[in-house]
Image 1 (cartoon, rainbow, N blue to C red):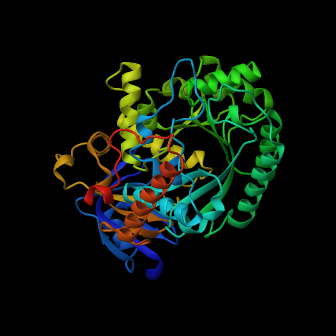
Image 2: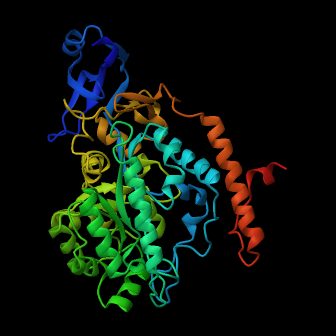
Length: 468
């Protein structure tokens, strides 16, 4: 028992169980990758006498965050894309920004995804849905970080253009088939890898990037592989306009007609919707990724309360440029309060549930996201002895309102420490940061040199240039 058991003792435990139970002077026992028991510290310590003891005094133990919509490689656009949102009114333009993202080599992709994983771990993320292209190029590198991952290879068959493109839809069937082949290969190699810590899903890029035939093939593939699927949905008004123009339907109606909606589908964004679309999502019991920070940056927000009332499961994601789920959780609560014009709802406990247990459920992990006996030992420890978290009177409210990613001192996934006492154990932090900075400067510089018609936005200057 001793070599497989850890007890975090003399601490406060936020369980996120059905009753949002909080235990004080408590302990969590972890054995063989799962929560063995949660209860009074004295009782748990006595029950597991040979366990490795971790002092949790002054700290709060809670479930780790589930980021159900992110693109690790797009962290290279940090500081740039946040301020380049497309128009919300006609005339619409193709793409989500007037600048393209630099093309990256395999090694450059690895450098960026490792930086994203590092930020995720440091801010308390334990599980993430990574939605990308050529994921096989970097799957091993992020698997090695110890994160729980749902890997999704993006599929589309629109020959030209991007999200929100007002132009015609020309089908490239070979492109769609190639995307499906990559998904199947990724699933064959990685689904269930690392003792089940890595799973693989199906990803359709967006309704305006996928033909009806491709969407039907992807739905069939999801059924065949018995896995989770995801799609960007009603992300920007340009997307809505493009689908209406080509399909004569709202994006969600288009998906419903094809039979793509289901209770194992994660719909990212859902910001530009009419109530009938929200009702369709709720009837299908779909999952919605509330990507609050990018929504705030875009100046758009989904009607989260309405989606939830219709029957959707609400989780949270960081999307592009950043991986800080603490900020995502707080921003989501604030945005929804502003939208509702309600200074009390949603409560901090609801926002915490969105970011933890609901996210695990969306990712197809019903035995994760809460600290209860038998659940996966994916947890974080937060130092509440810091000035901005004192007085410690209502720990969930205080952390949601005031907490910062740097307050997370310890991260565990499957009973293994990824970060301990502020030190990331699964990667070289200094080397990761330095390499990502080098790659970013090189890649953006290469793009601007190749495309003199593209101009950096105001304030753009690589750190090395500034230092020189």
